[in-house]
Image (cartoon, rainbow, N blue to C red):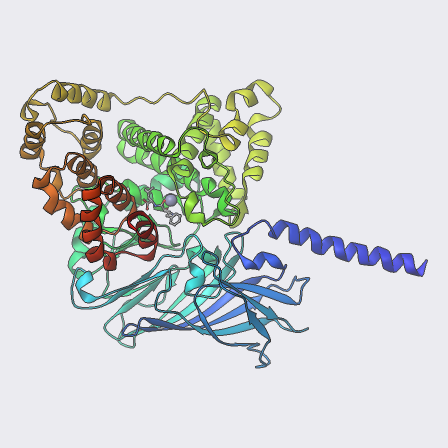
Length: 613
Ligand code: BES
Ligand code: ZN
């Protein structure tokens, strides 16, 4: 009797720890999943050494009391760990740094004592820390001060903070950052003071966030408000231009709240970075990081802000459980972004965005080739770099799937489903199965016919696109199709009716131009439109693809300037790839790359080194 009681007890204990383990253990990209020990709060102290390009940090973690384990794991990547201790007892803790894996970095194992409630890790970053880009003054707009920014998503946070680097693990943080007096620091949280003379900045993020949303920028920065709770940070000489470009941000906020409920964070500001930033935008909470390539002068590329703002719901509030579920972050956000744009600019505008997005999807599917397993919405990355999941499948197939559901159940029903989705899962994680369950519980409700129409399993677990997809129309782009036909048939570009075209129509026009054009046609286009020097990065990049294909040397200087300056991977990859398709072109690409590489972030360099080796 006594023994069976003990046995039962042991079994129960074992079972509960196992349950916890299985629910955490799914994420193969973080060492934290090895045990159930979790962090819940971070006090971060960082000193920024701009001259030597090092962050000196002390990460003080408060642990979650519910743990079934006497070891805890953190992710690190090329960090130098100097000390690990219990900040309460001041006792050193035993730790072990595992061998480094190229993608995952080194797991840091710490042995916890009976009463360990907090851990303090003293560390410094390495000069090639993957998340960090250190810029010389010449690489900034002002040319006077150095600049630093981070990019943590997907698993690069571990290269500047030892952390439990999985999207399912949330924590709040306070931070203190010390920088040179003439610089200003910003983080993804509430900022206590504007620029000050001490060089010390403090931040707090009172809502629990995953590590991939940790962000820091340091530079000569200034702020301009756009409304009571929105604003823009940029280098002083760019500030007015950026603020003028983003005037519609408060409208976007209203539209977003009308759609899917109140904004759950404190402020929403945008930081415009130097052009080396490898992405269009990054949804760091309360402080979106953005590329300056969206500053076109005519507000034509601001849907990117709608996208990053939308992440304040899809992604930051309801977060993908693992990087296999990435489509839940990005597919929802693209859908949401276009709904915001529809609300503020009208349906015709949103339809154009949707069709341009569908073109991207077609290109991506073609690049993968039929039946490729990475064209499924739910990915099986295993231990591959999550960066491999960063394709238009998650974005555009994901958004198309939601449009498909909307078209079947109707907008009203779908909107209330989404509103409820964000509300009831706020500050939680969601995986693909969980989404499927909600779909079936709240929208399908046992209606087999409806389930068959939605066909969710096929969208999510099968390659390519299902047979039935929503039909997309845009009258405006139909008109553009006609002008393309006219031009291809020999009409002079000057005679084409492009009156009142937006940059979306121009982009569609450039993409639709014949693959084969003669020099007269290229010259004609150049004289009439001069896309290479239009100041609109989307049009420039799309045009350069024709320039490269035809080896149209007249625009090579502009192409070179573009590649020297812009670090946004979405533009760089197609251009360098096109160049590298001929022997001579590859040589030329390599020559440019040698000079430009220093202007790119690790994320872009990783992809380009591989392409141009
Ligand atoms: N969160 C992404 C950027 C990202 C994803 C970085 C995965 C690293 C890993 C961001 O919201 C994004 O989607 N940016 C796009 C914007 C576009 C779709 C409007 C970009 O950078 O091009
Ligand atoms: Zn996004």
